[in-house]
Image (cartoon, rainbow, N blue to C red; front, side):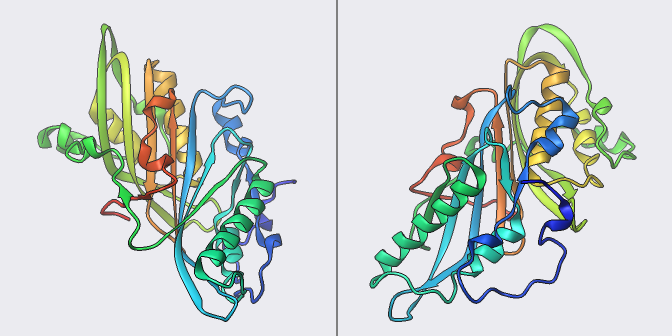
Length: 298
């Protein structure tokens, strides 16, 4: 499928579909952004998944009883495509007035299987589709980073001396000194803000980083770098991969994880995670039995 941003539903007036319609789905090639940062689909420097939480999922049983659920989608970053968010919203809305199984459980199974089939075909990869209720269990991601806000790891005096003037991604801001020892840094940050590539609307995210490197990193330079995304226009997945690639190229880490949990927009939030090793991936992202617990920003 040839990619053209003008073909997306983002930024356009769209009527709510009245009948189930898989043709509403639109995919975007990951290579569109990866090529600019030296990331090759055939030789990725990371593994990971994209986790989508969809909060406005509803459909009918055979006798017309509405069923409302939260849907969690999980698919690998190794595939060549991501689904465009508004097209997914419109697609899920197309289920609202459709009737499925005789019972609620039968309806849930039918909808889950249909969404799994449609998205797996669109993205050319296996997509996990799970429906949850408010009684479903949830897992807190990166619980050990709860009290490790990046700005709390830097003195107030140091932060006050920084002149923040870069608002387009500036990797030259990242600073560190090469040593002979391994240094480990684990932190979270609420500084991440970028903009949608199509609508230019702001996207807010909580960022999580684990990095093991021989570089002694100036954490204040990480702050400056994250602030430099403030006027960048990229999709969520692209931002995470850009940050990952910059940290990898500059600090040559032995282990690296970069994840983001973005604020909900249009009833959907997107949560990409990229890691050098599968063991770094948080169970909360991968679980098919528990919801992904939210952060304050979400």
